Image 1 (cartoon, rainbow, N blue to C red):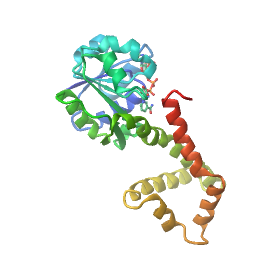
Image 2: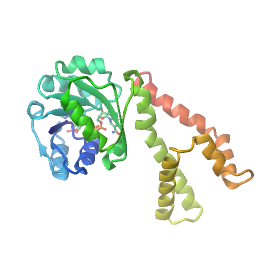
Image 3: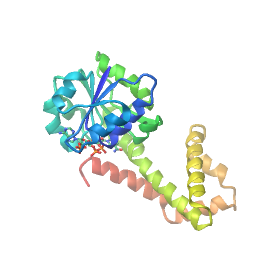
Image 4: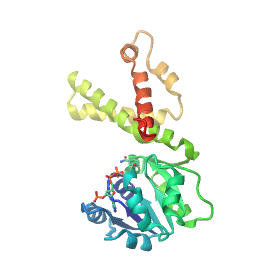
Length: 256
Ligand SMILES: NC(=O)c1ccc[n+]([C@@H]2O[C@H](COP(=O)([O-])OP(=O)(O)OC[C@H]3O[C@@H](n4cnc5c(N)ncnc54)[C@H](OP(=O)(O)O)[C@@H]3O)[C@@H](O)[C@H]2O)c1
């Protein structure tokens, strides 16, 4: 299996590093638009930089399309009809647009989050085109990077808002809580570690306990957690998170 990356930026790097952690990673090829990131990534994960998109596509079973959405029109004609299949990670770019640009090459529309880099990611994808062994094989590779979840294509943007964008909101909360811990006297490294490990635990625990009962279980009446939740409610933090998801969706829909 040969996987070519059209683009060697943040998301291509996260996927490639995640794949490179596996037992028998496929051969990986990389290209960029001249920044040198393709060579750096190839050196880091043990792949090869390829100069031209056409060569990359000709040599690849699957091309991971990992340029900015605005780059689709420039890149698609140079890979269409060459690779066995294209797997797009382009945000807010509908399957119909991808298929029109890349025909006759079969396309899978996906949305990974950045934690694929450490094997703890989520990859949402639109329904898989039937009878494309390259895509089936690549989905097996993606399964090694975390959860792979099929969603109806029209729900991919909403899924992106909660699994692609929301980790940044949680990182913001983690930073703010850790800073508050430092203000309260904790050494910065310890504060950051305690917050990080608490978040890891919550993530696992939420698989067994819904968010509302979890709050009840932690916040005993009259206790310190209750006081903190009241302070968050006074500042309408739940509404702020809802607004953040809404704003991300609006940006994807071109309304913002
Ligand atoms: N970042 C995320 O967390 C995330 C999450 C989910 C999905 N995505 C999606 O992933 C895609 C890439 O995002 P990113 O954050 O990785 O962007 P990025 O860091 O800017 O990377 C884009 C890459 O595309 C390359 N490129 C642009 N035009 C090219 C061309 N004509 N030929 C070859 N390579 C070309 C760039 O080359 P240079 O290096 O030379 O500039 C760069 O390596 C976007 O569509 C985004 O919606 C990103």
